[in-house]
Length: 258
Image (tube, rainbow, N blue to C red; front, top):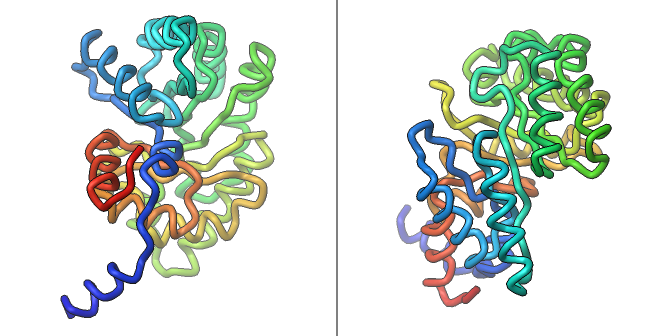
């Protein structure tokens, strides 16, 4: 079995570390993270060329200002500023979500990862999901029409609740439908804080199948290069990782340099 696995890995072409980094939202969402940790996160994102820096809303202005200074210093490939909304529970209500998201967009966030109301996603109630997120999308687009909105749907909780593969696929398809109708840009697997777990290749592939125009972000439990590749191969367009540097260095170690 190990020999077969090694043969498959040997036959798989290496993943360019620069391409990989450009797919990653470099993330720090631990509540105890301080300003020094956030500054380090930004510096790492600039060094490795990550897609965005993903933080709690309280840090958005600091991240934006640090990235703006990097741009003034002539740095290229400036990452986006990504903030989470109603994280990690998704139970604040649509009005509160919309107000918070609009404030973050005005503070300089150009990507927002929003937790959709869990009872709506688990019940497959398309209208309830839509009404939870649509006011937020309208509010942030009023503040900045270019803001990217990602709907977090906690796919692991769906996997745990589903009584069959068909039921799981229906739940995921309905979450994609609601996210499209609401005007989102992405569906995202997980917060990474739910007890049910994070992303799996199975749910990413099903999201890709039903996402239509939406892009797919895999997040939660992606800690190694093997994990990252599995999600990209399954159809993810973006990865949310707190172990981003280690993953990219692992890719570099296989002969590809950033």
